[in-house]
Image (tube, rainbow, N blue to C red; front, side, top):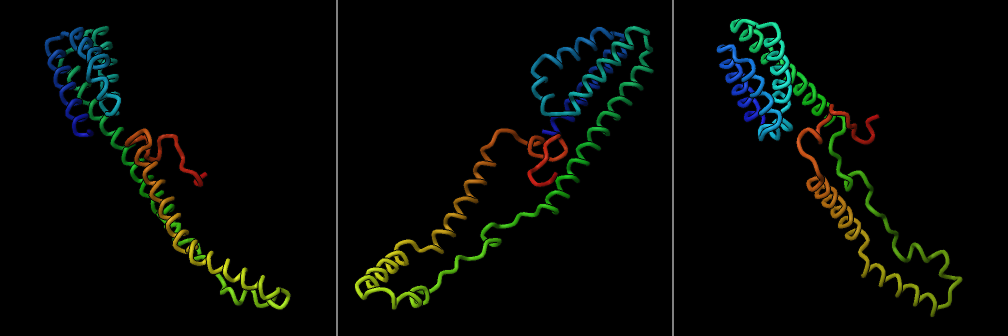
Length: 197
């Protein structure tokens, strides 16, 4: 998308220069208005350089109309503005990219499964040995049978690992399916990830 935006910047500059060469600043301004209101507007919402270049060239065209600027000067100013806009937007993009890399290093992915200790369970004999003398044989047999059922049915370790895996997969799917793309998920645009304040 960036390449398309830069190509449209070149097209906009080229057509503006053609109008400027003919001293048809009204036509150049009309072109910028069409760019702002027509189908390219939707591309401008994605391409920051195209958006700012359209505004800068429109301002330059209005100034050129009001002072009757010569075509050669108009051309120089249009090229300078284009280069300035592209360099500025590239600089901002580079800073945002570096910020993203720095945040990835600082907030590296860490598996929840590796961070949590495995669930430790003591053997039934160890848990019941201190109170076994206080219980009747019938109660002790029922308790051991119930604990065996729990051990067989629940499989705590497997359930926990499965729950963590499902939690991770659901979080990934939520991120993938969340609205927004590109710049809305990058740092440096006014959003701060949790835990970085």
